[in-house]
Length: 368
Image 1 (cartoon, rainbow, N blue to C red):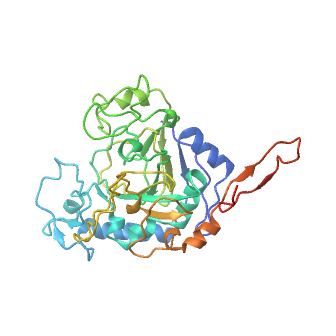
Image 2 (image 1 turned 135 degrees about the vertical axis):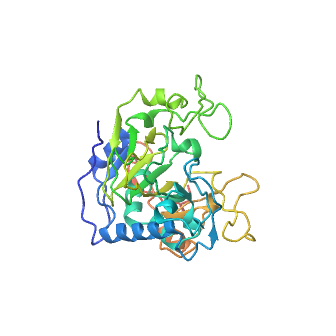
Image 3 (image 1 turned 90 degrees about the horizontal axis):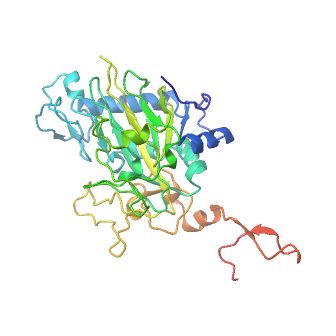
């Protein structure tokens, strides 16, 4: 078993700003992912774990609807964007089997919005893909004992951004290792293009000469997943984590998880996806799932859905949404303040013979 290298564990009780080191920055570029140890505090891990256990038991106040009876041993346990409670007559162990993952709860629950916009997580993202950061998606993974993993895949296959700046952040709610289904990364595979599907849903770099179309993305059966042989070109590193660690990984890097082989351990994780706020996307429109009368945020002319997603840091020339529950972030700042705090690149001008090849702060308002 080969495991991933990562940064040293950091103290988080004071919740000071997290500063990414040069070595961490290089590790992310070289491996395609970075494990930041102890980014969440013990109190935050406890809050996430308690919330997740209430959700699994169907005891959140927002869980006003009940799932239909089904055999959880024969399905994926995915509830999509719904927030339903498992049938009330089940035991806690049986209720837990009704969940594998739930999508986009930041549009329904204040806690999910707050962790999606966690300041220290945004600190890391600002260094890796910023300074302008757009928050796109949340997922809550429960992965009870015996539940399957997810086969090799690239996240940009599912969430395309242009330019492609997608980055995931995987918050460990429980310790995760090889037994209960920690993530595996094909280290270095971030240099691969995104492979398009032979048919059906999925996105890829279709215009590249010689690009291979693939089948079976995310299928845990390697024989059915064409990305398995691409992942085999690279060192496959296990990324074990302790609760409170956060794994950051780019949209091209091939990654997977395996079955939870344990008898009594969950592998719960909160996952956010982000991109540079200057990137265009047509993914993840908010059609008002919490309000059936709300207007869609899809731009009629371009199909752009940036207006569905929250501006977490920096500024952007593209549309963006504000947080539904008022979590502090760049989207709530006045336009003048966002503009004033934006970092503009230095401008090189003229040539050295005349002495004009100097560096000066560029001014977006200047008339050339």
